[in-house]
Amino acid sequence: MNVKQYLPVFQFALTLLFGLHLPAGLLAQDDTPESSIDRPNILWLTTEDIGPQLGCYGDEVAATPNLDEFAARSLRYRTAWSNYPVCAPARTTIISGRYACADGAGNMRSSVPLPQAFSAFPVYLKEQGYYCTNNSKTDYNYNNLQGIWDESSRNAHWKNREVGQPFFAVVNQFITHESRIRQRPHEAVTDPASVQLSPYWPDTPEVRQDWAQYYDNLITMDNWFGRQLKELEEAGLSEDTIVLFFGDHGSGMPRHKRYAGDSGLRVPFILHVPEKYSHLMPDEYQTGGSSDRLVSFVDLAPTMLSLIGVAPKEFMQGSAFAGQFETPHPEYMYGFRERMDERPDVSHLIRDKKFLYVRNYRSDLIAGQFVDYQQQTPTTSVWYRMFNDGELNAIQSQFWSDRPVEQLFDLLADPHEVNNLANQALFSDIQAELSEQQRRHALAIGAQTLLPEPIQSAKYGDNLDRVVDPLLLEAVLDIAELASVVPDDIDSRMYRQRMELNIVSDSAAIRYWTARALSERRFEGVDGFAPVDLIARLTTDDNPTVAIAALNFLIRNGLEDQRQDRIHPLIDFADMTQTDYYTAVYALNAIESVREHLDENQLERVRGLPTTPANIKRGDNYVERLVNRFKSEPDR
Image (tube, rainbow, N blue to C red; front, side, top):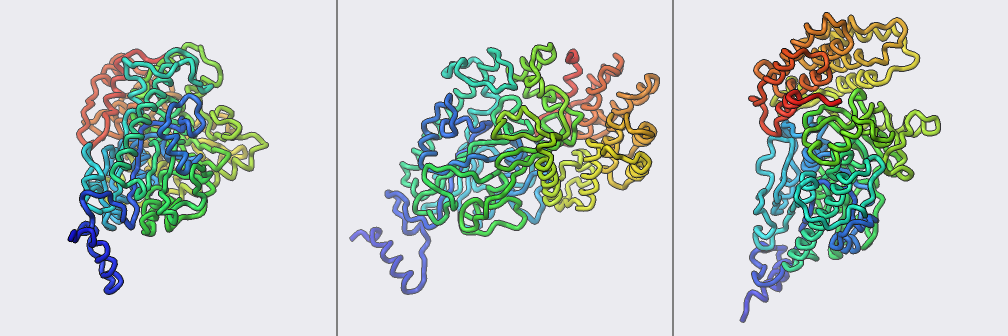
């Protein structure tokens, strides 16, 4: 008698008589597929740097038969966002279920703690008995996430779990990463003549080759995807496993990755739920169907808990789009852009199913700031050169030109985001509604985007319970808005009184944004208002970030005989023997913007600045990149 074959019968009898459940591992047979799992396995198949350029999303160039077949038996989300247009803060948002900026973790490759009261969501799956693996990219901005995976490495695999144990597994593919677009030599598959270029790129051989190579990498990725599904099927687990496919942000091409727009945030997002788990399917789930629900990365953590029957945690800021705790469709979704590599920035985004609104709090910066890593892509470098040589049309020049404070795009009529509708009377109500909604959302989540990184670092340090006072955040937001938009009916006397109070505020963030507000040239036409004397007081501020902003303005706009006295302290702030890493990044950006005013001795001093950070725990050396910019000729 083969006792093993009767074990399921014994289990059923014991359950009826005593409510007793034997461990699943005692019942499973090693030589048969596991098909009696009560809770679903969950498999994420993710890839780097791709937008929705797939056949199943209507792209006529893409050769992605495996993903297209998968979509034909799954649910495809038409509009999905990564919340951030670059990997580290996007993945930080994923792992916590919180917008990265809510914890000061929205800057590219920063290092902050996840508050002690919270845990990364795989921890909650492990508590429910799930075997959790990650193969293998992490790239989180949180520095205290040790032990959240059962295994996180290139060898991590759901096969390594105990017999019968449900799993949550992430498998990530790197072939589509930005760096692979420019990898040479490359054996071409896609004809560069066949690709459709967006109107903001110039039509050059370099651009066509990069975009065609991107499609070639999609082919490789699609083959990998097919192999992953086949492996699951051969293990007899296809009907026991929920599978989710997505990219981590827009494509690695310039004006996609890192860009504060739909092209930087929109990703493919396809969900497959086997029929046996139909009770966990989204309400709109149809085999081969599509959903108009707005989904974003902040929704992933609560959804994973919902799929295993656990209520999402209160600290999570997204909403479940499937499972037992599925929520109604949201009206909006939100995005953010903060420091991208060596370039600080602040933009907030909101979109509904038709319109995208962008608020650029640093309207003094262009969208296409010179990012060393991005410039290594041939498309970026040739596009930048052509702009400097005056060879681009108006649309192609937008990326390298002055950026407006507010942008509004009708994404149905203008999917390439080139026709800014902001400040047009016909769209004033929509603009006002989206602007107010993004403001309310920033306050509701405690977005720390407006606290410059050096100020965050100095204020909070390694405090694991970092919380921003909501009243302080609102005050900072108020002055940040005035730093970019001056009301037409401004009362210069009242405004000056407000500025005088702000420059002695206890909050370094308020003093910083006051310096930025006073730096705006929009004040030059305001009757009776002279900001120079006020901003001069901030050049000796106790907080270096405030002083840097004030010094930068006065160097750009001050008297020639006073410039040299202001350049020297600015260089001091860039010296990591006297300051810290993030302050040096801010100082070097300020110095670069006034490079034309530096004499040769000052340039040599900048070129000789130390570039080995003593107090940065992780990430690329952005100080070194910035110093190296002074070792070459300035851009025209």
